[in-house]
Length: 88
Image (tube, rainbow, N blue to C red):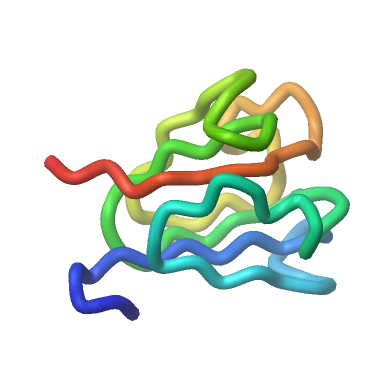
């Protein structure tokens, strides 16, 4: 976990399976690491995740918790490409 206590992990497959990408800071484009995102684990902080690179497209706000499939964060599909920590 980062010094700020924020961490989010993206998984290609449902139920935290498949390739993963760990992030502890803002990332404008992680699509090159994962072609799709079907589950997320937020281990610290609250995050804004975006459908497209550079913090654009549909945005979802995810507080700490586990999201075993994209419908759990009200996602329209399995496509996410960028994220940023929300500092409250």
